Image (cartoon, rainbow, N blue to C red; front, side, top):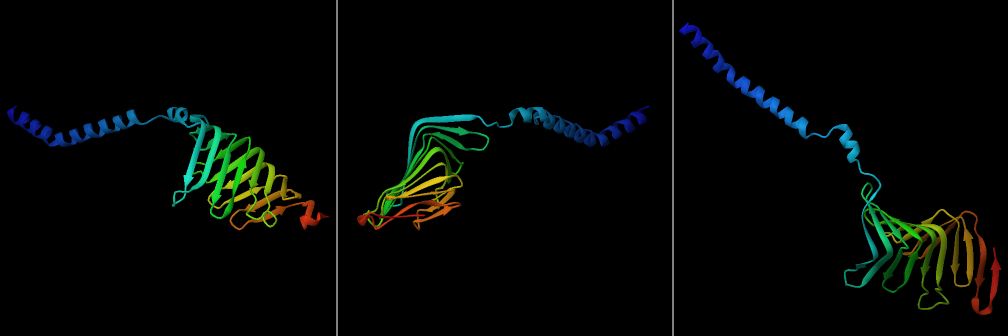
Length: 209
């Protein structure tokens, strides 16, 4: 009997490390399962297109390296959505300033801005206004009106694929779309273009296209 007990004790001692490893492995698996969310929990926690914070009557200013105002962005209300990190703005107004160039203002009833603040979509009574240059006869006031504009802030470009009316001084043009590059001051009208171009304003001569 003592020999049997001795052999049994030796076998148990040899198996003890394996038993401890099994216990540790089982405990680890149980903890992982306990702390891992189930599919239903993941679905419940999935982010929805709902606001997580908002600001009212806000005003944000971007400064250039020399401290001068580069851009000012205001609105009645800005709402942030957690699912896509976008911003919805009520009555947005953006004004861009560049050295030696007339300021450009963009307004609308509603705006959607991406998470990086580089693209802004303007909806409803959208209006782009570039003030006249130092010599209005050569660089008159420019406006573009549409129900939709897309602003590429970093590139200083405005686009729309909706009907748009462009005015440059006394000239008025209508088109199915527009691309306005404020850096190069180039305006490209798209689709069916029609309107009135006033040539030599002092003489009041006009030409219709």
